[in-house]
Amino acid sequence: MKNYRSYLQIASEVDRVLKAQRLTLRDCVDTYNRKYQDDITNNIKAPLNKDFIQRVRSGKCKVISRRVVDLCIFLQIDPYEQSGEASAIQELKDIENLIRQYPVLESGLLRLLQDIHRLLESNLEKMPLSGEVM
Image: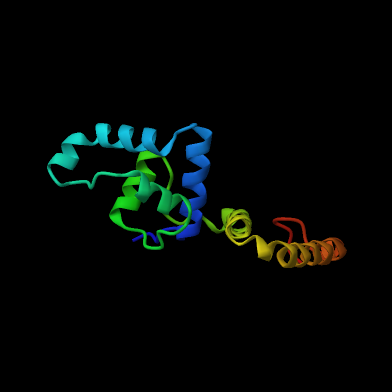
């Protein structure tokens, strides 16, 4: 069984998709509930509301429930962990989300990232190219 992505990764993707599709919370709720009306009536899916989507979007919904997965599928977001190749980029997105939620972290994290960048640059010549064996 595949593991779910972190709630911060899902929050970031939900926020990105809503903005990219220019969907308001109300539009998203109405479209979802209309699309899955039969499943909602038959208690197969739970209806959505604006508060729920806002909690997911802001990272306040820390449990990946069936309802969160249904929202992800509706928005065409993969709720499952991705391969290791994409994880570094996703971690940076998660850091960006933390900075948005807690702006006080920005200066310290920026210094840390700058130090990491300088360290990597100074050691790049010593590192093998991808696929190259040392």
